[in-house]
Image (cartoon, rainbow, N blue to C red; front, side):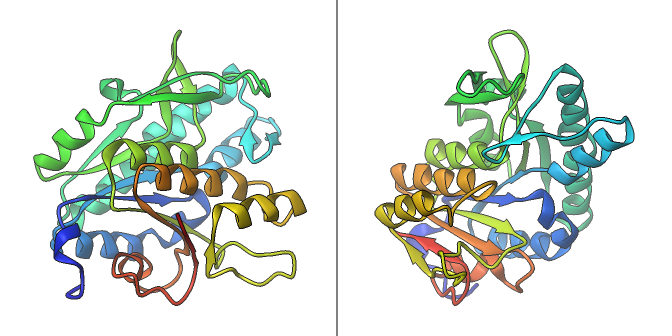
Length: 263
């Protein structure tokens, strides 16, 4: 990453690793190490939808979604918390540590970092919407040399709430003054109505693609999170986590794939 801009070094870089991209996490870990060596401060936010759905299937529950958000009853919240803040989070921390990258796993609820209230429109059960992010725990970890690895379980008014990981990533990027938010997915980027990947998107174009149905399902919270990150002064991109150097090319503003969001 020798071409990184000096003035952006030392700034947080928020990486959202989607559940569908978890099988490619070793390549992501290498990219994170390079970003750290280049002077950036990575924050890794992860999902784990496929793992949650697999565990729910084992106990005979069918996963339900509304606009890409998981309907979460009390039993589903228990499974989500164990999967996200437990198994997936600690596996990622272990991989980072074994690769020589100091990492600290946490849920959004830890230290009161991500606070939420129960979503009512629509009512998805124990699903929250973020009301605030306290960046101090994240900055404390980064200042101590750790890569924070954040699971999207937030602190609600009466206990834990499941939060869409895309939303958490966008709000963390906004709150920490991140240089960039990068979504690593298993798709090449945001597609238009013809199926072509858009290299760039403005806010107006996002709204148009959403009205047309081209942006739908799980892509909705990703796009919304990118726009939220822009509000905080960050750059934002949706990239294919299977591509080599997917993080580095966006840090260097040299991306030839994926979708970059324009302010």
